[in-house]
Each structure stands twice: as structure tokens, then as C-alpha cells.
Amino acid sequence: RGSGDDPLTGIPKGRETPLAAGGAPASAPAGSAAEAQACAPSISGDCATTDARTLAILPWLVSIAFLMQMLDSTIVTTAIPVIAKDLGESPLHLQAIVICYLLTAAVLIPASGWLADRFGTRRVFILAIFLFTLGSLFCALAPNLKILVAARVLQGAGGALMVPVGRLAVLKSFPRGEIVKVLSFISIPAMLGPLGGPVLGGFLVQYTSWPWIFLINLPFGILGAVLSLRYFPDLRDKP
Image (cartoon, rainbow, N blue to C red; front, side, top):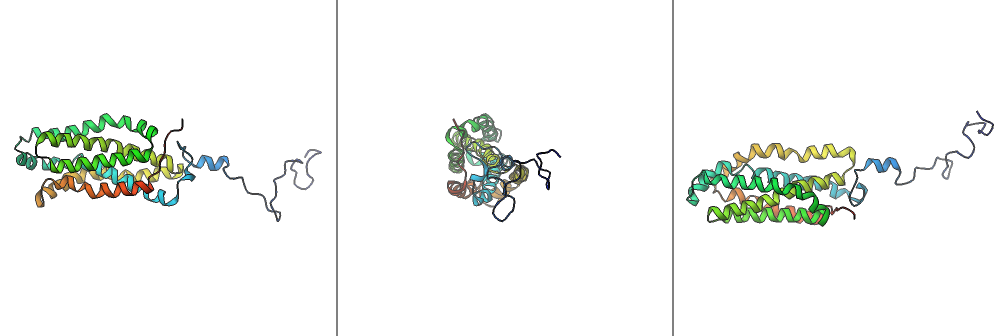
């Protein structure tokens, strides 16, 4: 112990832990480095700026969007013969409604991050739901193959933006310690969609009619858009 150390504690004088009223050690200042490291980096602030209700609803919004996108990539496969017969087309020509959806999604997914940084995650996510829902309605009302393909392109554009922007909002809103759990939750539809899509499509075609494989998206899309207006975080890149 040096000559300048406190004789009782051995702590050098001038380095004692500050005491709060009553002799208890003072708490660490708010916004300490440890607290900052607990939050995932945010493009418009830290995770503390997102309220608890938003954090509770956000994973459900993203998982429903994920389910809608994954279902529509496979739900039409079992309905192709019925749709072809109704539209007077060859079943081989109906493969275009599957291919155009997947190609549109693949082309636009890389642009989703830039759009979210430029216009904000909430606006882009709501726009994606609107495009997807409107495309679903046009698919159900399509009188011929050309309009059906165009409507599927519109659907693919919405689907290409929904999932990446939703995942981005989750990464920017939740603490690092919870990200893996939340991402696992919203990834469940990715596993159920390819399995349940053909089954659901076959069921709807068998017991209703083929437009219902698209109309089933409408209530989910409307509900998702309404909830997103209130609970989806509006994050964007700072200039």
C-alpha cells in the first residue's frame, strides 16, 4: 500500500467510489457503456426508444408478413390445373404465375434496404403490404392470364419488400440478447409456408374456388397495415 492510500480500504485517495445519500454507492450513470452495448445498433436511436407494446407486436407483424409471402410462393402450384381450365389456358402456360412472382421478389429484395433507409421502415413496410394485398385482389379478379401475371408481379413486389424490411426493423429495435429468439420466432413461417401452401391451395380449390387462394390474403393485409400504422417503428439511416 502506498503512502497516499486510505489506511482502511487501501484505495488511493481521490479514487474512492462516490456515495449517494445514506452512504450507499451511487448507481452507474444512465446510458453507460454496458447499457449501450446491450442494445443492437439503431439507425435512428437505440432500442430504448421503442416502447414495450411495439416490441410485443412487431414480431407478430413480421411473422404474418413472412407467412403471407411464403404461402403465396407455393399456394398456386396445386391450383394451376383448375386456374388453367377456368381461364382457357394450357397448364404449362400457368407456370408463368409462379416464375414471375419468384423473379420479381428476387430482383427487388436488394433494393429493400436502400428504400427503408431513404423513406423509413414504416412507410416501406406499409407500402409493401398495400402492394401485396392489392396484387392479391387483382389476382382473384383476373379474367385472363396476362392480367393474372401482371397481378402476380405486383404481389411479388410487395413480398420482396415486406420480409427484408420487417427483419431490418427487428434487428434495429431489439436488444442483442433477444435478437436470436425473435428471429427464430419470425422464421417459423419460412418453414411452414412451403409445406402448408400446396395443402391450403388444394383445400381452397376443392371446397371453394381458385380466387380464394388470393382473397385469403386480404384480411391479413388490411389488419397488418392498420397495426403497422401504430406499432411498426419508423427507422431510417441518419444523413
